[in-house]
Length: 120
Image (cartoon, rainbow, N blue to C red):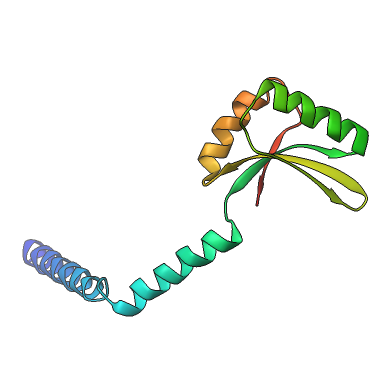
């Protein structure tokens, strides 16, 4: 009795699993989904999604000197100095994923201890 109920339960679970896989596969080729993905990619290109490393947030003089020091130690890395009242921010790099930003942060923190990862 127990074996037969166990076998019936197992067959029902397998059947339900097969139907759920089939239900998902018929929507994978939908033109609407592909259209939404393309729109999202176009939006991301224009609105810049990703991460940067923020080195400093504070007074202008110190911000400018830290930016110059960073540019000497890491030539070729994008740097951005912005003013957001009442403080200046130095953000460096353009990283697509948080993982890439964290890897760069580990290297940068050796020389710039207050650095953090921020979204763009």
